[in-house]
Image (cartoon, rainbow, N blue to C red; front, side):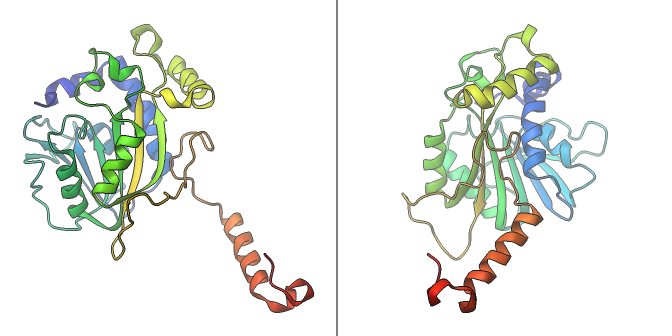
Length: 271
């Protein structure tokens, strides 16, 4: 049985939930700064994160599993949330460009079937962010928040799930390094712990985040190397750093230079 939607909503009104949302939102906005003309789906209890894109995305919809229950979302507008069977989503194939999964995987009774159903409704080359409680973090070891419910995940366990369900991980990150102690959960204290954790003990964040992509036309065999586009700690707050225009221009010039035989020393191509 999943954590009730009313309890999840209550969590995000408390100091602990507000701290969790702020730390996760910082990374989401760095990852997906713009969602113009995109259709977004939030699965599980993703309303607090869909709020980041309201008024910008073409469409945003919150789907809540039947065993969890549903609440009205967004709070200040017409309802855009729905309730249903998580293994039979009421959407056509390839309907969404982006999916955010929050409080959706830890308590799923069939996580592989769930991910395959999310794969079905995600557009080709569409991207999904999965936000789960981290097995090595303090938050998954306390009963005082929804992050202590269900099954937390390690990076290896999530990687295996993605391999089995034809998703390719693009980037990984962790968040929520502040301990789940009420007097430490203020905005200023949380920021201090976040910056310290990213540099000193990056493996112990309370939240594990992964960005994955749905490829069509080629299946990546299990065991192949994953493309690492967002190394933890390399750029704080970003899962998938985007190359700057200047870097792209330099790379294009270098590629053109290497392809020109007149530029090869001694008539031989560069190694």
